[in-house]
Amino acid sequence: MPRLGSTLLSLALVGVITLAAYTDPWLLGVAVLLVQVLVAAAPGIRDASHASIPSPRVVPVVVASLVATVLTLEPDLLSGASGTSPGVVGASSTGMLSGILPAVAAAVFVALLAQMLRRDGRTHLVQSVGYAVMLSAVAALAAGWVGAVQSIDGPEVVAVAAAGVAGGLLAWALPIDRWVCLSLATLAGAGAGAAVAASVESSMTVYFGLIVGPAVALAAVLGQVVGRSIARGRTHASASWGFPGAMAVAFAGPIVYIGGQLLTMPNL
Image (cartoon, rainbow, N blue to C red; front, side):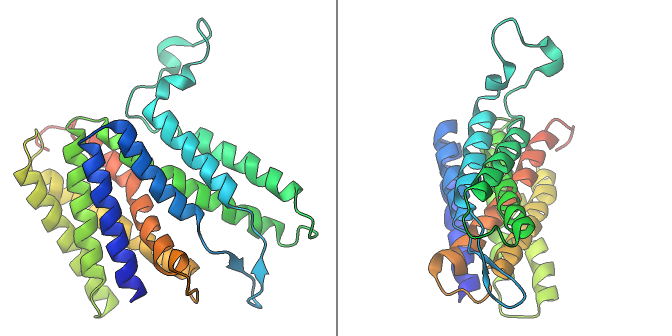
């Protein structure tokens, strides 16, 4: 049941992202922020004795999410004050994931600051900081959905990727052997992506769906597996299916962005 719940949540999230992609980039940014907030609601980690490890993570993840999403929407914010920009060498063009490194850097700073405020002896310091930074990096990568919509045929790219994610996760939810499921997820992602690529009005061909569809499907499956592994044994909805569902969408983000860049290649 948790796998089905997280799958349905992922489908709802990519559906909202697709609708937002056809509406307004900033609305898409809000939809992606929803995914990132669900990542921030990750369950805590435990040590070998199953004792909870204090890990302040919500604020670092939210900071990384805001920085990554806003800078992906407005990369010119990195240009600096007038007269200080290095020109074309340091220029950022719309659609580039120029916000990921600043987002992770900000998350590391905030995570270390949060550790300084701990009053419990700062036990398991490395694990605590590492977990917060890992979640922040994953949340920042979700901004790839925003970067993709700014590429050639951006909304259509998002639609193809969303179909691939949906097809892959639905196949992965089948109660059969996991290796068989993985093969079916790959095929379902390719089929769904190709079907959407062939039906939308854009410059892309069916081959684009056959490439991007299975790639995002596998990324989404990996994200769900990682999320479910972290949330194993938790019964709260936000941990048992909310977090894995968001992780699946976040993991697909950079693949979607790369897919958008593939449209610059001929015959795709």
